[in-house]
Amino acid sequence: GDESDDDDDDDDDEGAFAPQRLLVASSAAIGGPATAAALAQANGWKSLTAPSLLVGNLGYAVATFAGLAYYAFFSRYLPN
Image (tube, rainbow, N blue to C red; front, side, top):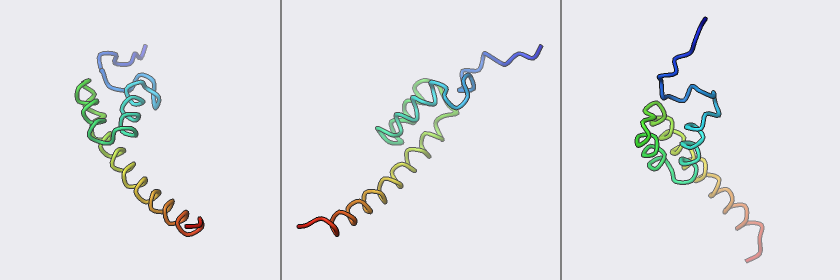
């Protein structure tokens, strides 16, 4: 029948929850884009390098505005 290509060390094994993807995503969330890209490159997961950089930088962008909103909210409504 139709067999999948198991020689590929990419992240197609388990779909969205493949261990490689989870490790790189966790690294991007904790250490940022540089550590996530380093993890992907060191383990030979070339297809996860660009997504790790994008997700890490997106996390920085979202967290920056979330932090500013948090500060603006609490500095306005909490007593000095």
